[in-house]
Image 1 (cartoon, one colour):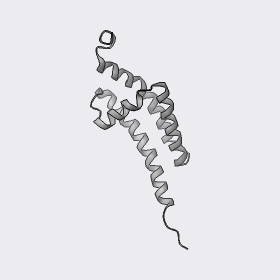
Image 2 (image 1 turned 180 degrees about the horizontal axis):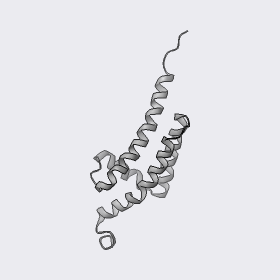
Image 3 (image 1 turned 90 degrees about the vertical axis):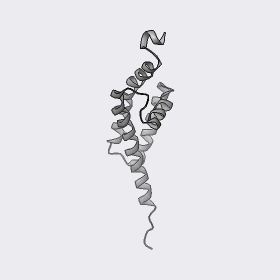
Image 4 (image 1 turned 180 degrees about the vertical axis):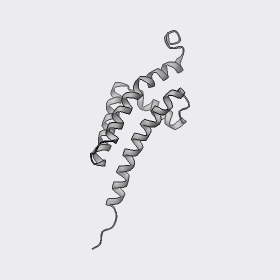
Length: 109
């Protein structure tokens, strides 16, 4: 059945990603570009990923697999979308880490 409709498991896998990545990118980019404080953006990013995971339960494993493999299993047209999603995560997370590091500096007494 999968071969008939999609041409194989790989094509089905890519179709799931193709349908999911645009929504994930839209949500994550909006959070990344928000003027909200870094800690609020990080919370929103995690909540958004959790919401997407409820809609597509296999999404976290699929994204992690592709990030860890460098996009080994996805079609080339999906790679920029994966990188954009990864970038939104890393930019929001690094803002949080930067803010935390700044708040841990010693203050003059």
